[in-house]
Amino acid sequence: MMNTKIVIAGASGRMGNALLQGIFEDNHLELFGAIDRAGSASIGRDAGELFGKNTGVYVSDDANETLQGADVLIDFTRPEASLAYLELCQRHNVKHVIGTTGFTVEQKAKIEAASKKVSIVFAPNMSVGVTLLINLVEQAAKTLHEGYDIEVVEMHHRHKVDAPSGTALRLGEAAAKGLGCELKDCAIYAREGVTGEREAGKIGFATMRGGDVVGDHTVVFAGTGERVEITHKASSRATFAQGALRAAKFLADKKAGLFDMQDVLGLRHQA
Image 1: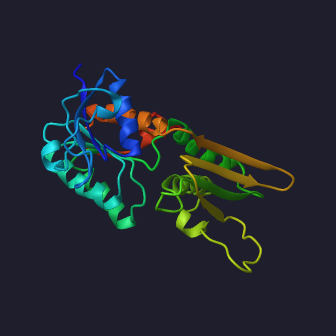
Image 2: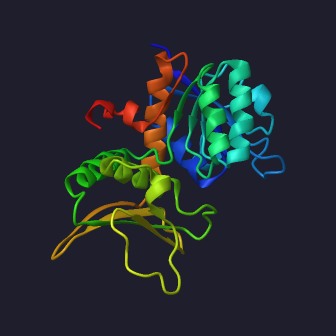
């Protein structure tokens, strides 16, 4: 079986480095291309330089050229950049793994439309552990739907630009599904001043930012006399990279369609 030819967007970033390392450690994956923003100091350098490797793959700011002949693009960038890459993926028939967060409803609709032409794994968190957490939260919400208040608490590093995190929102969606409602109808994203008593059936969010925290998420089910907390803490970006590479392999035989990590891990039937 031929190796999957991978292109990494944002190759010089923290996630880019984690993805490079993951590819170098996997005999079934091939680094085909590396993309970075124009003006980056990494442009023109060998993508394996940081790891002491001479790969012959040089970091480029020309995504159109780099994607020609590739199998999969893995992309943890920004919404606008991801959508631009998605246009090129459709042009060159390249599959797309999108770990970018912060998309608007309209932008998500563009991703869904593109999935009719190319196969896409789109997930706010590529971690295997978080994917399991999403399932657990939905099941817990189904069981603890009466007499328990749900709060989603998340913390990330100081450089994260969107809040709540995409993962926190996905956990909120899982809890809402367990309750039998839409998150948009039951979410409370901010509290300030005299807010009155907490309304039953609502899902609250609390966001913290600071330091170099990779990503902590806790869903709290607070009842009378007890509290159930389901937590995931990421200590390394390697967990997201490994999940993204697993998603790239999953897409190997998919010509089109929109998938997430539930599909990649075969958990969809359990939801």
